[in-house]
Image (cartoon, rainbow, N blue to C red; front, side):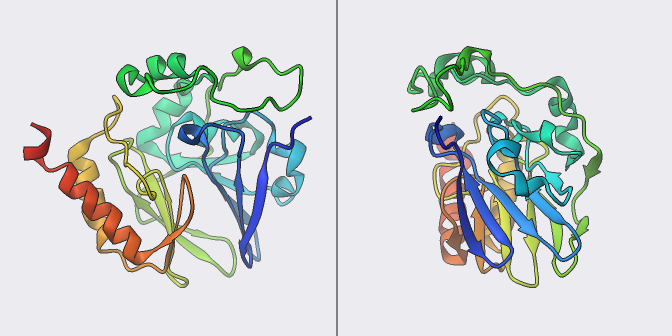
Length: 253
């Protein structure tokens, strides 16, 4: 049996969980924050292996799951949580069941990104969780929210308070979380240290540009993104300003 999840203590009360055997395009971060009164989990991974099986302690305090947006690599394990929150603009997509497959070309077709997806491998995993696992049986059912979020809403965990930021562009309901006291931003896929994807059918370049301009001026200490490693404010400015240059209307004509 393959050990599926990798856990790393980032700082006191914060754990980063990732799926090292998933292809980088669907290898997302799960952020587990522990407050004095309750826990918050930001995103839920692919759902290939239940979190309950390998990381049972993450569910011990009945945490609130916050989904940063409606894509398979962030919502696959959502069904394991009793309380599930996301922005209302992505609620309908979650309720329908997000497009999902571990077959690269098939996933690209379902997402409507066949040109980009041509470089996807046939299988988006480099190992199976156990010998009997059938990747063809993978899917994600409808996700019903127990809480619908809006921008500027505050989430109090006891000892740490986070503000919901509506940062559309990648999807209509993309959100980030800002812990102002510590200067920590949980950015989902609104920004990460890489090429920002704005050409999915549900993406909106104009909205993404407004989001990037907003994030470029945000005073933060560290960004914990939906994919890849964390980075600081200078890198946040570099990534967002690079996106603004790339996405300028003249360059997209």
